[in-house]
Image: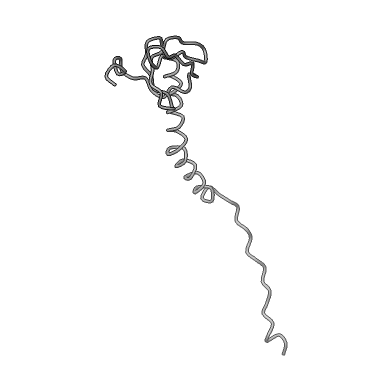
Amino acid sequence: MLDFFISNAWAAPAAQEPGLASFLPLIVLFAVFYFLLIRPQLKQAKQHKKLMGELSKGDEIVTSGGLLGKIKEVGDNFLLVEITKDTEVRIQKNAVSAVLPKGTLKTL
């Protein structure tokens, strides 16, 4: 009579081995992150490194802080920049955000 209320205990099915299908969402997520975040950042860093390597005396620049000036001297890590006729400042090379076309400072 007790057998009527007690259900049978069956063994659980065998676990399947993880295949490529279980890793596919992870692979797709990594690909999206690579193309949307990592690759553009690496490209921008490469362009900035090229920009810093091409700096020369006489270039008109803008720093990341918004300082405009003309390069008077180029060192390994620092630049001497003339911001007005009698004012020169020494800044780090990596602070340069853009090189302006020649004659831009005269128009401002």
